[in-house]
Length: 158
Image 1 (tube, rainbow, N blue to C red):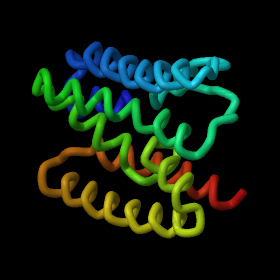
Image 2: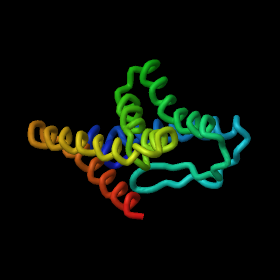
Image 3: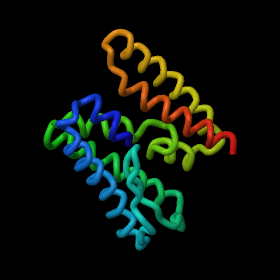
């Protein structure tokens, strides 16, 4: 989650909603971890969002459900409240690029092709963000794309 970009996209008056829905997203991960008997080590807050750190002693299927529950919270909130911030948080977090939940799910389920899938989707995201930037003067998605590209280049190098 890249909170600053969403705040720019929706205006700073929506920043509180973005932070609240991001916290509920992390709560989804936390609840599933607790159901599986895993205690989190810490919750980190950064310029780019929030993250839940824990010892990964889970099976692949349990890890998948922990990863899925954060975006699932946003999807449920979107369906119930028809709040488009939750839809965008859901779509962003299932995007198949690290460190997002979707990227972690792809790497967990398909480790051999996860890098290729990430590169393909980052190319598509960059194209879409350039279109939005030139056509509608929307820069937020480009900020997200640049962050994800930078993160994944570091990850692929080592």
